[in-house]
Amino acid sequence: MANSGPSAARPVQKRRLRLRYVAGTLVLLVSALIAFLANNGDQAPSVQDYYSSLESRVGYWLLLGNTRHCGLYEKGQLSPFPVSKAQRAMEEKLYTRLDLKPGSKVMDAGAGSGYVAMYMARKGFNVQAIDITPHHLDDARKNVKKNGLDNKIAVDYADYHNLTMFQDASFDGIYTMETFVHADDPAKVLRNFHRLLKPSGVIVLHEADFSRNSKVLRDVLRLSHCQNTLEEGGYEQLVANAGFQDYSLEDLTDEVLPLWRLFGVVGYAPYQIFKLLGIQHKFTNVMAGVETWLNWGDGRYISVRAVKP
Image 1: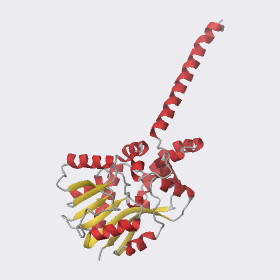
Image 2: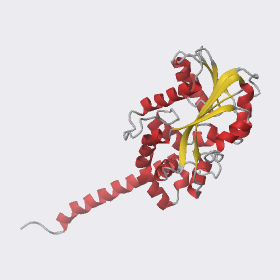
Image 3: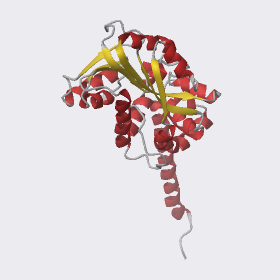
Image 4: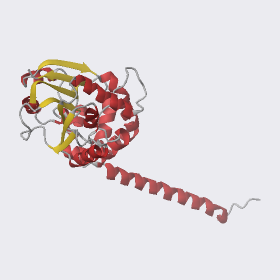
């Protein structure tokens, strides 16, 4: 007969104890990771705070390779991979929208780690890259030097709300790649761009607008310092008021869906847990990715182009 006494029960108890220990350790590690990655929950973070949070830095590195913009896909495509190929396609789209000759001088207003600026430089442009986030500037300078583009790209600290260090009529083109949405005063930024452009100079803005203003959207925009994102139809009047003409808009919403679907699927389960714990606001990018995917159609990804007379 098998031994069913106290001695036989001890191994079972030990195994249970080990399992509880392992489970407890995993819970502590996950809790520590969540606390480590979470932002501080600031109700109105600055642009620098948003991009400098560990959640943003890890997320942009892990999912986008520190290239902080969407990819452009064929309509109807399901797979978002390879992401880098789609990002190059988006950069090519911006380049074609600028429609400038090689040798033109352009400003990258919000250059991040410099990947868009490097694409434009390889296309023959001379690029003035500006940003206000210290680690972005460090990354951009390293990337430019690493790729041997020092003679084509200048990287400097500058805020597009105050561009007095640059001369009037000194640029052929100015572009933003998902950075104009961070503007505290969009009208002032466009007036600055207008002053810096030569006659017939071009602006191209790859940005977002929205058609349904919900509380969740307002939370996402506030937490990512995009609270002045325009409502659908707002760009045309804003651009005209700044003195630009020949306005055109291309709706690229369908072509960016595969990447946003990836954000939504990857972030969905963690986001639901964060909501149960009441800490979803501490994970801005998870919240933005999931809510944008769940509410697809409430906003657009657009390419705006206009010309200084």
